[in-house]
Length: 335
Ligand SMILES: Nc1ncnc2c1ncn2[C@@H]1O[C@H](COP(=O)(O)OP(=O)(O)OP(=O)(O)O)[C@@H](O)[C@H]1O
Ligand SMILES: [Mg+2]
Image (cartoon, rainbow, N blue to C red):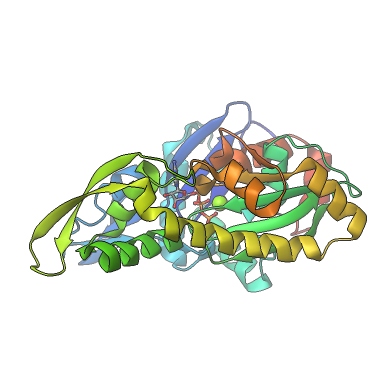
């Protein structure tokens, strides 16, 4: 594929684009804002649209067109993609780029058709779909074979994908609807029950980034503003990592349970090999402090965590886009 080729990861929280010959050229929230009385008018996209979250008036409709890794609003998704494509340097080319797009592990035929319509509406006619965990493993530069696959746990905004993969594709894997949004709502409930404080989803996300830690005794803290359930008036509390450890552990324990289920489905030798090499974490939630140690303690296995884990999938897409043979082997829409 030529320089007019991109890798695209349209996640529930973030859309990232890698351009062949360059690097990651776009990383923005998967959000678009329309004018309420004229839905053909785009008000803001990506980072600019995120600034409107929680502050929209009646005249603005804010849409997150990807939910649980599925396209839930095709029209908005293609408008969002069109804006992103116009934003990156690809616009210097007269034609739309060729696209290598990551899709959730185990995506259905119906899901694929939705992705196709979104791409076509955004003007893309040349595209290849590849299941996301394979791209993530390639992006993390993990060595893998059929006999010794890589085990990926990608914890994103809407979903967690857990899969054993090789360069031939997925050996065994699942996508579950547990992700950052689940943790956001668990934190909102927890603060209501424990501190009688009502908070919005943006505040919950700030807590996740600011104080959530799996390290026992972590004293990191932050001031959290919300609304008192008792008086209805604005209120604030000093929240420490210890205050949110319980819901955080419940969240990760659920993910580890599914991890154990997928591990149990693998042949014994393969499973033993994975035990030796450890599990490779990716996605935004892999940045939670103390995950490595908590996983080792709970599962008795090593966790490999990388700095650029949130863009691993699109980096893998970039590697595949530059390797025709690999692309032919891995694409799931063989035309
Ligand atoms: N430092 C951090 N600490 C905790 N959570 C974080 C951090 N950075 C990002 N996140 C969370 O990670 C999530 C986004 O991760 P990611 O970009 O991998 O999701 P996605 O690929 O868009 O979603 P999905 O794969 O589920 O469709 C968000 O919920 C975000 O709040
Ligand atoms: Mg993702």
